[in-house]
Image (cartoon, rainbow, N blue to C red; front, top):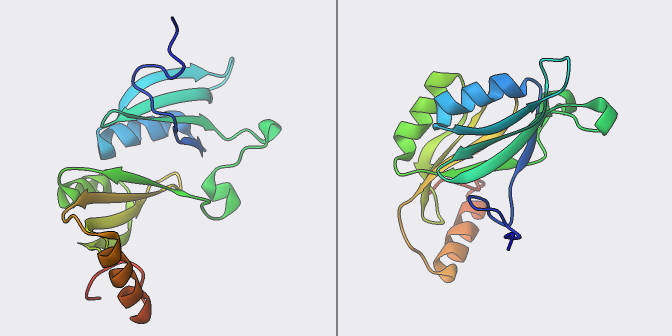
Length: 161
C-alpha cells in the first residue's frame, strides 16, 4: 500500500520561491548542512521547476520564481511573507556558520522568554531563518508572563533586553 505521506516527509512541508534555486541549494548545504534530495530543471534553462532539500531530516521544497505561475521571490516582493525556523543542537555555532556562508545577521543570538536561545539571519536569496536551540522547558503561564513582560518593555524577543 502506498503511504499517504511519503517516508522522510511530514504533513506540513515548507515550499519557498527563490531567484536562483540552484545557487540557493548550494548555500543551504554550506550554511545549514542541507542535503539535496532532488531537482527538476526546466527544459532548456538553468532554472529549477522544483527541488527539495533536507535539513536535520525535515524537507523544504523550492523552485525558481516564475511569473507565468504567479510566484515571486522575497526580493521581487520587497519583503518576506514568512520565515523558516530551524532547531539545532548549538545555536551559536549554527548562527556563525550561516553568517560565514554569507547570511546577513538580522537579530543576534539571545535567550528568549519562551525557553529558546535564538538568532535570525537573512539568506542571500531574501528568506529569513530563525535559528534556535531549546534551553528551558516552561509552562504556558510562564511563557505568557514572559511575553507580557517583553511587550511592556517594548521588545518581543529577548529576555532582559
